[in-house]
Image 1 (tube, rainbow, N blue to C red):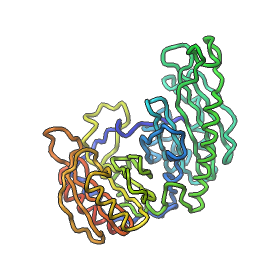
Image 2: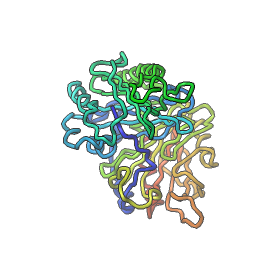
Image 3: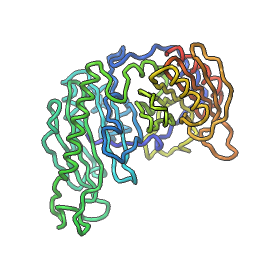
Image 4: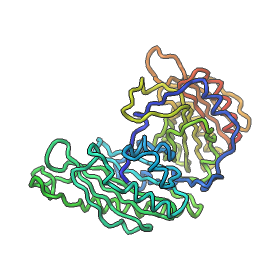
Length: 413
């Protein structure tokens, strides 16, 4: 499935600061997992992790998109009506970038109400004839599927040029179905070059480039891993690096908020400013969600500054013991573990949070520049064998909102 991966750093959140506390602090019940009360699956647990990928790839962004958001943020060549007609309920995208900017690997999932709707989604999202000229590749070829999952399935092989008449980039996408899930693995990478520097199998202008066997083999192997992770979640099991109980332990998303970034993170990964490096080997799994007030705007919108806009980040980490969680809290207070927002933190006391063994608060700035006043407030706490963090970023009244939300997060745990 061709899908425009837009890093969250490029999203503009046009938010109103005042509703952050009011909207996020409304009473709600935690979501169940792997299937929540509205029947939605834990797609984030299905996504490939750094451990599944070749060395040299780092997490860039993971996020859910509602059916209404898919055209604006992923497939602008499709109308909202066309997307809605497939029956897709939501979409999940996990993007890893190669070191040095030489490519990207992503896993993605479309969740449907039935296998028949997933097949309808395949017919729409895999129809490259819908692509406008601005998105059309130099060459396109549909190959047989990766040999995993169910039909419909295919491997898409495209090449691109950035100024020459010969292919310089390649896009290889393995798409398949598992029940009502339409899933895939996509590779963006340079097209392999011959010894003289010209693209392999295309030294003559106009020659049709041959599919790169190494790229095909990689996405095929990763598709097999992806299928295993999907099947595990469908069976109620937690794939490596995940814990299906964590999303339900996280502060729920109020209907008035928009999910911006969300997913599981390993110790060396960062998402929405939340990272737990050097957690003493006791970290089992962590889950983080960044939510915003108001609709994000897609790339290319004429909007003001990209940073310093109000949103809420909540994260929960599961440790092997309560002692390990308490130690992680101490490391977070010392600045060893990354907490949202990034940048310098100023201690703001140790608030008493009902249900928490210990907690500390901090102030920070969404834009850590000289002379910029703190506009963000976060609370980290240890509750049993879990570490939880709630931060309100870039909003007036961030302290009151964060303390209120921290109490609700402790209650969820």
